[in-house]
Length: 72
Image (cartoon, rainbow, N blue to C red; front, side, top):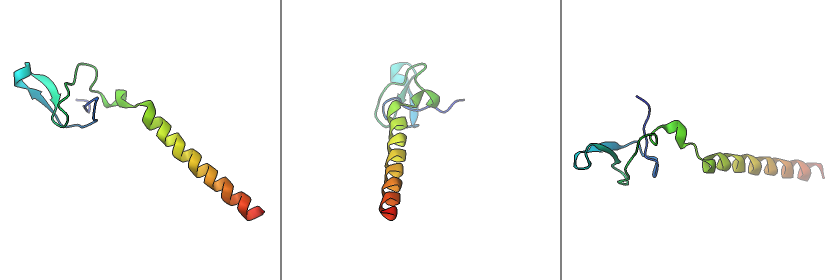
């Protein structure tokens, strides 16, 4: 069984709600988890990818500033 997570909050705490006919519901935020939305591979968003590039750019910029300061 694949890892399932909530598309809204990312929590893996899911439960089948009997009052909704067995529909999978997140116990953290209460969002209904539909078919095809539960696979963690589909949860990779552009925000997390952009965040990694920002940290790489900050590190590279800091390194360049240090090199220029040492040589000058």
